[in-house]
Image 1 (cartoon, rainbow, N blue to C red):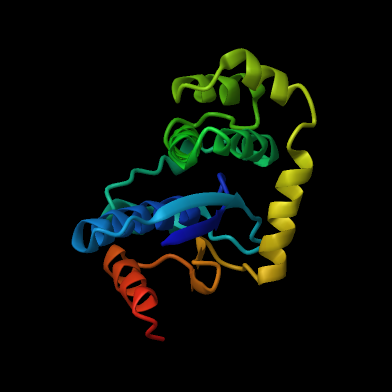
Image 2: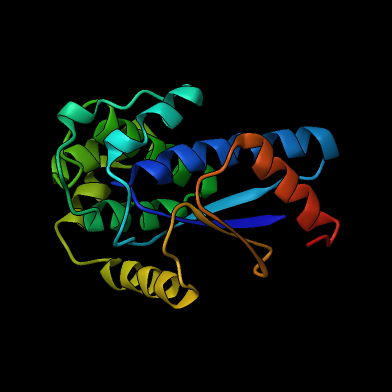
Length: 191
């Protein structure tokens, strides 16, 4: 099973919903033996909920949000880096995305800062100099815009927006159990 998850690095529901979906996908694999491949793509949601409205849902999932110290940031450079990281595999991209979420939502770090981004890339095993070079250029900018355009074309207006097997969608933040049930329904062709 293949899942493409449209999220944004600066959106709290993207973070919480993705963690819940990843856990559900892991549980699905344990129960069925069938792996769920998860890749992330950029999107922008105009009416994203403020992080302080997501704090309770985050806590239920064991995620702390430090809303007082969040630094507003444009996530374009973060997504250029995440798109590059995907070339090293979905696991590397996911690990970098989680690093950026922690930096933004817990540590109060500016994820639009190229030093922060390159440092986080190095933490997940990507080459620091290559990350610096990418961030000093416009490389992957068109790819990020295409991802965002695709999300807009799909009608993404809530996050996370998950496309499973290029045919079924799961929109918005749900419980881990709801995601797990959705994966079972999709695998068995049940609406």
